[in-house]
Image 1 (cartoon, helix red, strand yellow):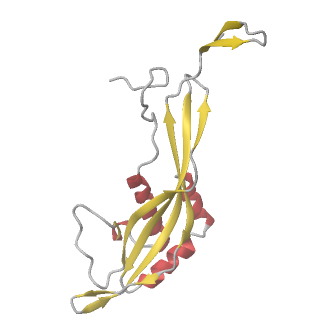
Image 2 (cartoon, helix red, strand yellow; image 1 turned 90 degrees about the vertical axis):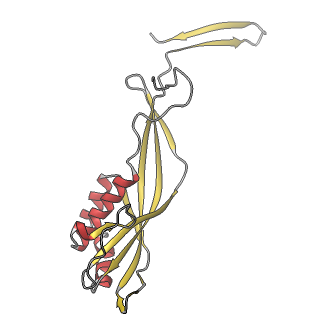
Length: 195
């Protein structure tokens, strides 16, 4: 099956798509683990098809998931004239994640994460992957009753601006046929071709 381009007409799929949301979620998980000091195995995806057993009550851990995203403006389409040509569509969205910390140090871990996301070295690592830290909500204590024991829990909203680039096969214009009408009413056909 031949993919459509601007030369063939029809709908075009991007040649290079933006990073997947799963990839971005994995990056945020790694940042949460690195900044808080939790092992990556204890910063778990919030929704899993086969959930792992809940860690023991005295264990500090985090469940992380993306709750949604919204566009921060209109996308921009820029033409790249190199080679056969392509359009690069640049879009920014703000993604909302929630990090839920459990365990005796839940409050401290949420506080450590917010403070750590202000460190330039951490923000540079995120930016190199197309993410910009956009802020955090207020930590929300939300203790869970497990059996007859209250478990410390803190929910923290995190916001990241995500750069999305998609490349579409919009080819360079190689020629055009025009009809020009002069002031005297005469029309002339003009053909423009690439030299």
